[in-house]
Length: 308
Image 1 (cartoon, rainbow, N blue to C red):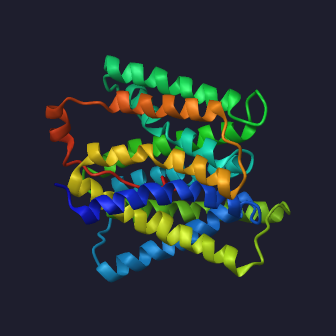
Image 2: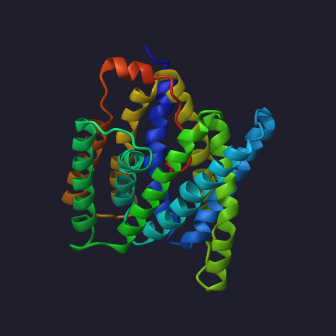
């Protein structure tokens, strides 16, 4: 039987990651998108650096690893965070959570295109099912029928995250998920600096003047992103990726329910139906016979920006 504390932490990760979407949407009422993204990344980077200094377990990457970390930081942090918060400003927490849930399918398709990985009929069926769900959400999941600029930005953010996972896959050959998370997050934060400066020069930057808002921001960055990232990787190491992956079906629906009661967002049939299709598609695409699942149980996953 899996360690109860580990399973409890995986439940905590699911609930906190689902709540993160709502917290981000709430904070966007008082923060401009890029300033909010940058502030959260700064807090998270400081937290991760502190953990690294305390544990003294970091090693210096090779030149090739530095390049891969830079590419992962650009795609998985800079592009992902810029488009995520800009998109969320014009969409809903529920839509954001559901669209980000498409990431495994995007990663699989990118692996096929760039890495020439084979796609089984199950993966093809899962991809079609999940994409049908995205169409439902993008076209019918908003306040009116049509494509929302917010949802388009969220799709670009998810694409950035998916691209970063290709680089991370190469990095895991010689680096731990712990090291990759810290380096890629810090690099992405540094790269975000010009963007937040440009937002300020354009007169579009603004932040909250309330202490509670800043405390919420810090809590989301440290607990909702930093601590949960370590819990997630620990869970994968103990119970395996197949069991851990089941908990990723929970955050989108947590976001929909919590945003309804906290933010007053309507729960639409297209959201629920599209969400079911996306999660079903991901489950179908990732289905493996028991023999294959046991062989992959030792693989470690990396959490960089799931946790939006």
